[in-house]
Amino acid sequence: MKCPNCSSQDLKVTDSRSSNNDVRRRRQCLSCGFRFTTLERIQTSNLLVIKKEGYREEFNREKLAKGILKACEKRPIPAGAIDKLIDEIEIELNRMGKTEVASFEVGEMVMKRLRNLDHIAYIRFASVYRDFADIGSLKEEVDTLLQGKSERSYLPGQLFLIPDDVIKANVKKRGGKVKIKRSRKVRRSYV
Image (cartoon, one colour):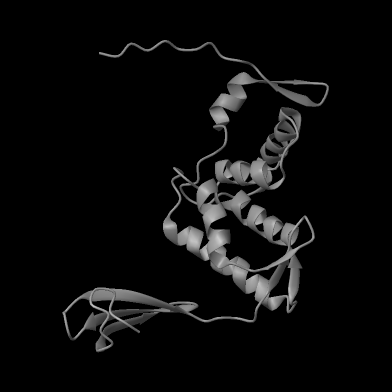
């Protein structure tokens, strides 16, 4: 290991913290005094992901994290919850004991966990992952999410897709289908 500041190999570890699958080490260069943190992660067996097009690529935790973070962008989700979600998926993939896994299996694992974490992040991820052909298929997914709403328990602080009071005030049931009334736009004046 080299110092990122002066490229010296004369380093010492000042602090070491271990979590589930990784170790964070605080290091200091003895030549220039520069301090930095390294992250050590256990490398598991090489898992190949079979893509939709049929080609295979090595499982990449960072690529998975990037997709999940994009879906959770600007949502009130703690960073620790996202890291935990990614860890759970990686552990589940390793427990499967397979050397190859289809990309749709990984996507379904992500969607199952995002559905319980945050509905908006779930819909964002599903819209890209399932590649909805039209607005009707997206609406069906949102309707399915709303129908299952009463059956699931929510995490503390999780935002609802549509608040209960809005649903009660604006929903009419006709022939088993749910239709939401459009509300008038409220004009706001800004000073």
